[in-house]
Every structure is written in C-alpha cells, then in structure tokens.
Length: 311
Image 1 (spheres, rainbow, N blue to C red):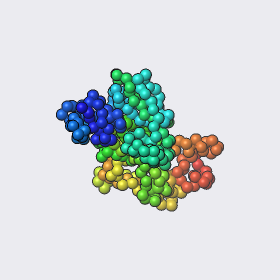
Image 2: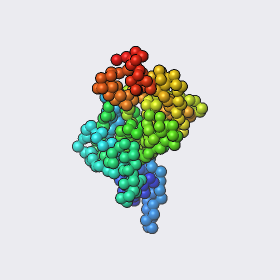
Image 3: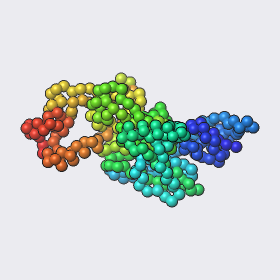
Image 4: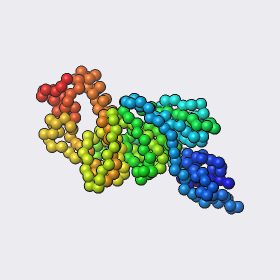
C-alpha cells in the first residue's frame, strides 16, 4: 500500500505523514489513501491540510522557532538558521527545493538562476526532522523588524513580496520571480524591476523593518504609500506609481513618486524600510547627518541644506 503525492507524483510508504519527494503533508485516513492495483497504478488524492507549530520570539530583534514532526521539512534562506536540535538534518539544495523544477540539471540550474535575479543566493537550506519525536529549529531575521506568518492557501495560493523579505517556509513552497510590467513601477517603485512570488498552500514566514501592518482593500479602494514601505500584496492588487508635482518633489521630502495600490486585495506595509536606515547611516558617515528632506530632489543633491536642513 502506498500514498501518491498529487504535487510531485512521488509514491510514499503507507505510514508516511509527509511526502519524501516534496515535503507536502499527505492524507492520513484510510479513506483518502489509495492502494495500488496489480497494474501498479495509484489514483492521485488531495493532500491533507499542512500544519506547523511555531513561536515567534522577541520584540524588535525577532526569531521564529518551528517544531517539526518526524519527516517534516522546512526551507530557509542560506544563513538564516539560529539553532537546531539534534534530530534535525540540514541539507543545501539548488533553487527552492520544492521538487517542481524537475530532476534534470537544466531545470535545477534554471530554478537557481531565478533566485539570483531576485538578489538571493543560488542555494537554499532544507531542514528535515529525522528523529522519531518532535524537534525544533529556529531562524532569525537579518535586521531589526518583525516576522509574520502567512498561510498561502488563504490568499489564493500565492503572494508577491519584496525580494529580500522571505525568511523560511514549509518545504514544497515555490519561490519565483515577479516582473513589473509597468515601466514606471520598475523605475520608481522602490523594489526595482523584479519582486518575489511565493507559490504554494503552506505556511511562509517573511520579515521586514520596523512594524508590519496589514490592510484589506475593498474593490476600487486606493491606498497611497511610500514606495519603500510595501512589503507584500496579493496578486489581485493593482500596483502603480503616482508622480508628485514639482513643488512637492523639490520641497516636500516625500520624493518624486508614491506607490498606489488599488483593491480588492490584501497589502502588508513596513514602518521602517531597511533602505531608509542604510541611507541615514550613509549620510552620517559622509558627514552630512540625517536631514528631514531625505526624500526630496534638493535633499538628494545637497541643496536642501541651504533651506535649513536638520543636521
């Protein structure tokens, strides 16, 4: 008797809780599991809803501690691991390790290459519980901010996020690239031409700077925000750019463009983009100090100091 995973087609032993091929949860009741007939054919079945036990610790310097069942796996960015218990096996994999890129070398290289385009490493790390009991593994955020968890199945199976916000996820989650089709968004959107698309039905953990807030947009509702404050959004949100008038761009301190998000959909925003922190540190190192008109054209070229810039 065996259980066929509908996601990757791997045939698992009848006592398996998670697919040995892609890591997805498998059905555990006899009614949903299918036995192979004499021809060796197994009817695909729907996978069970995956569950993950986790705790997010800390206030401004957070980490997430995940408790894995025997055979369960998670994937994470290289270098994100904080600690792991004895029964956890760590393995470096090409691409996202979802098993959907194919087993051939070209498929794996293509999957890894897409990660390079988003500014990430060629490799990811897979953590699997090989013990007979629950084991824990923890991952920490790379800079001050918050960690939040999303269940992708609650948002249509995918979200789009900034390219450096992914921290870790249940194995089987795909990490793809999301190109900005609008030239204005690509040039002035704060996140560049490429963002990251997370695909699957499992839990994913993302992080960002400062505090993260969630906003539900009604159909036709428009939200304007600083281009660097966008963390993630559902795929049905329309992302565009609205340019400020010359007076506001020169003296307002809010920059030349604002991001406009049109509903329906869900949006996550951050209060302190890490790029803003880096900009303030860079300005201080150059001896200019932080100025209030950091986002204006005059401030960026140094003329803002003539109009009473705050040092």
